[in-house]
Image (spheres, rainbow, N blue to C red):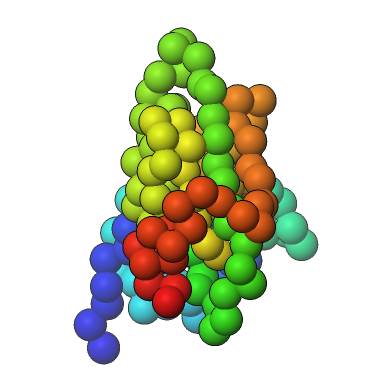
Length: 182
């Protein structure tokens, strides 16, 4: 069986999902040998996996904890944040079988000193399929409250972004056509 080379994304996702990665540690913080792997990690090249683990440890994205006499790899707070950013790339809004007739509005007024976060939010809303009503007002027909809460948290702009659910909106027929709801 040919083994795959693990990526940082894969290692973080598996660790976040609870896959077990135990390492033998020769010096504090330096993983030299992969001692035991859950079946999730077995398909990966051990040498490459050691390299990825060492790099993540050097970046303080992962840490080591003692459990039952074994050193286990765990995500640090920095690692959890990095994992959230990977999830951001894969985020999508689920389309229900039937539309509930309500519109989701995202309205924001993000200060200039957070311009980068503002632009990332705009790009992500467009990527998620929102329609831009005005420069800082976007609309979507499907439930996306959790996604907006997540974006507010990741971009650290919670105080500047408001989420609303409305039953009526001007130019509704245009929006229904735009989203293919007719």
